[in-house]
Length: 303
Image 1 (cartoon, one colour):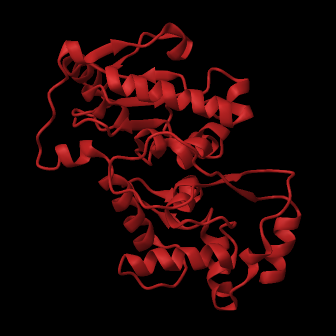
Image 2 (cartoon, helix red, strand yellow):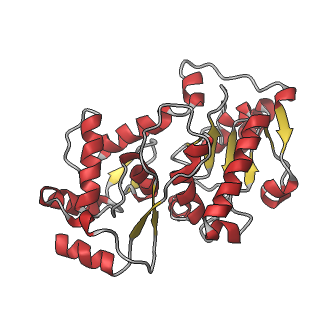
């Protein structure tokens, strides 16, 4: 198994790189003090460190992770999915892994996470471990806590709101956010373009295609379209707070940027923009709703 993993890395099919946070604000919640990790896929670069192949005790776990990565039947958000590949950048960031998911090094990092959260430290990704990861991610969203008992936050007062510049909206769409959230977004985009050439090369990336949505209009739309069960048209959407943004990350061929179809979500999770966000957004106070790669919420103010 170890030999096979070395050959896989040498073939350049999956290469990991470390993205170290530099400057910026920190997440104003209980985020772990981990070095940010992101992966390049595919990449012609050099393989990951040989340390990823050490740890004989995790060789079997590595093999099981390799088999389940794009094949395991899972449903972390209620809808059946195949594999956990879509969540890989977030998982790597959370467990502090700088190794490919098929490697003993990744399994060892996963085992450490499992041990810290009262799970059997097997190093094997399974439904229980993914549920624990989801719980951690969702706990960082103040909107989740604010709606835990069925209450839905009122929309912000007009004086707390600001309009984004036309260039900040995807296809020049008018976008409104809370003033401080918009400032944090702008700082984040400047950093992203300065730190990642692929993001700098396409100024559509990280533009906003949905910001504040007026609750009554949002409810009317979901009823008219019959899609109130969908996250994009939830009866109590985080977008009513003026703190949530849907960011353009590109889209798989034939899909809209906000499509929740698995091929589109997987495409976006492998995109340079999402990889950068997964590794760095917490520096600016943004957290992700993991089912939707494009959906981010600013945590600097209460909903």
